[in-house]
Amino acid sequence: MISMKILLIVSIILLFCVLTLLTQVGGIVLLLSFLTHRFIDARTASKGWRTVWKFSCFIVFYFLVGLLILPLLAKPFNRAPLPVFSQAYVKPLRAITWICNRHYVRKDMIRVVNEAAAGMQQEYPGSVINYLDAGFPLFNGYPLFPHLSHNDGKKLDLAFFYLSPDTYLPLNDAPSPTGYGICEEPRPGEQDMPASCSKKNWQYDLMKKLVPQSARNGFVFDSVRTKTLLGLLMAEPEIEKVFIEPHLKTRLGLTGSKIRFHGCNAVRHDDHIHIQMK
Image (cartoon, rainbow, N blue to C red; front, top):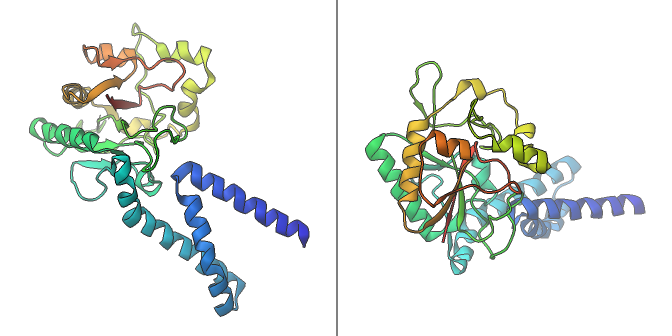
């Protein structure tokens, strides 16, 4: 009996840590949901239904906090959520981004992305800017695992644009289930920083090794729309840096001091775009 209680306590602590690491507030919501357990236990005879109701209460609490309370709490930190359902041309690539509260940025960043989306509509109507990880809503310096720098609302990752390999028509999706890890590899003769950095630091190529590559053949890198998006972003005065791999910078014919190489201590950036504000 004692060992089971210890196991339960350890499990709760581990779950709290995981939820806090991945969502920032999920651990706190878990503790709040425990307030309903005595009420549920007193009114539910079946152990199975108790579990169902307790889990349901956690889910309801979590989404209430995420959708209604966090946007208000984020305001003193000069952060706001990127559009989830409200805009047709700026969306999260995957729902898990907003479910885990990883879509918060400075308000100026939202303006930058909206202006870039408007520019894309003028050039390529129907194109959707799909965002990946941004930041958590609360506190500067709070890490957004596994990123090194997404801790102040000034950084945002964006997906590349892609084409259908059959029709070469534009797609508004990406091959990776996470948005990361399926890379636009260096061609023969191009600078191969992924190969060089992978020899120096184990994590540089890690996402490619972890993410299934099966969907790769269903997408073709859209260099034209991706270059246009990068040009629009670099034209914004608030944007200080844009990270992509050197071989893509050369291939796309990009110039300017804002296009940077991120260094071998990060992860490779030929699967997404990283932008950050001053």
